Length: 358
Image 1 (cartoon, rainbow, N blue to C red):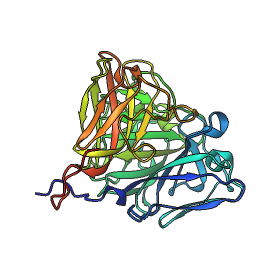
Image 2 (image 1 turned 135 degrees about the horizontal axis):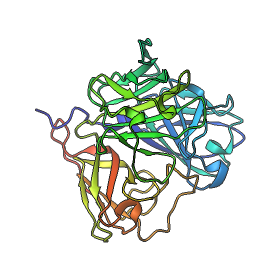
Image 3 (image 1 turned 90 degrees about the vertical axis):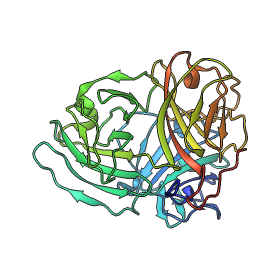
Image 4 (image 1 turned 180 degrees about the vertical axis):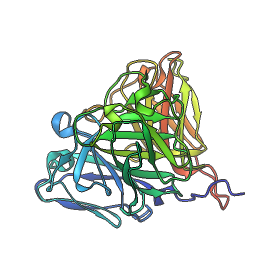
């Protein structure tokens, strides 16, 4: 049996850098060595600007190019007809009057891109307490975008993956509310918030003390996930060997921290300390291809790229990542960290080609 069914991770996940040129607008075409695909979930962040223009900007092909959310705050969905012009077959277009959130002149930007189903949704209807909505699922890569309308009563939502999600990010589109994160290394009562620093907390009203299945995830009565009549978006991921992994590790507050096995050379890693108050951190090998990695961004902050830390560092290796810093964001002593990771290269492809370490 082949080690992985995804020999080329860039066919489903890609990171593209670009430089802003406001007020002109531009088409961002993904690198030639990337797999050609329309990004269905697009997450853009300025590497240089902090404050109001430094938001973590999120759009997707289900809600459409004029609807954006920000992971770094709890605001409702914004409608901006002059921001993202379009999702393209191999990248995206920024509108001529797009704001500094995604196109400040001379700013450096990173765009993290995932492929779902090209914007094509499968709908499901409200049934009893179960919300109605739709999903666009990529079962090969284990990713689906789910939109649904809340009922206010505990019910289930179809995700279309055919496998049990390991991570789910949920956001209320209709009004201000926290980004609620389900992670398989938390039990089905605990959760974390993508938009702030708090440790994991227990609240049965998010997931109704019920774990996802291969067909549905459960939402409780919390207004953050299921207020009657409100519109929600959920980004669901299940693990795929050699391509994605969603796990946890223990910190020791030492330069010689944990080695975390993923089964692939990571391209993107997102980490959160769930025991203590700490920022989320984002690491990728496109912004900085060398070890030791000490250049981080923060999903919960509008900060510019942090390049100065000597205590928040890690190495990207051929089969995982190695913690090299003592900061509690990634290595609190005795604390538990959760992570999400996507591959640059599987440890071994289906044809037997191994990953090469840096």
